[in-house]
Length: 289
Image (cartoon, rainbow, N blue to C red; front, top):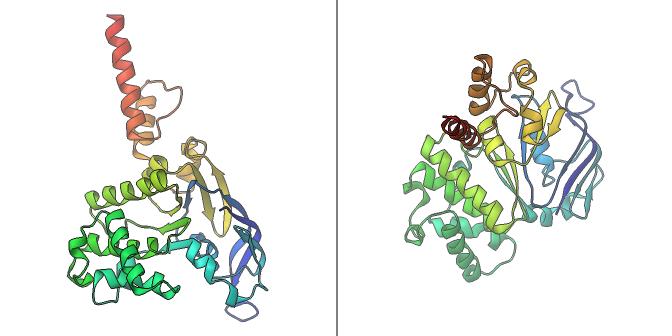
């Protein structure tokens, strides 16, 4: 299932003294099976755009296509529930939305809300626990007795229990320690590669973009100002600096080496690319001797 934006504009509190335009003529496409990143500073429009992905808000003008559904300002709100099942959004700090007395009940809440029997919903919940890397021994525990990382996995399992085709992640590793962040991103990559799930990642961590995404949209003040593959976007280091977006660590290191005389056909985007490049240089140097 694809999502496409056609000349989408969004205005908060239109026709009031508090009117504020958040999106300007947005055109973009999120292809089925892709891993797409949305980046930009606070106030760039990322969060507003994100809410259009499953019709939590509707465009003030323009159209959002979600699969075979066309969402405009006139779309009836009563018919949007199926979209919320197909496009699951994991907001920042999703663990704050846990509320049930046990882990299994919390994960099963969504499917039950869509008419699945309690027995089947709890079976799905146990499957989702395994999918996010948690033991079913935690099923009857209170989610509030778990560690922060475990609570976040439970909250994500609750979104996955709806069996979405598209998973939208809003700063999913915020507040986690480095190991927790690595484990979380590895889990999303498995979902993408093994389940074929479309991933949309909203992040300020450029290394996560280069390590995982296959396409990037850069937003600034409600406009898409650049888009392309990570290499196309991050190749222009000076542009990144002027936009104060940050540069992937490997690319920054390679740029420092280039200033000291080392040449690169293409600047490395990831640590693994940097390691491969240096290993190849050492191999050639050894052969030359």
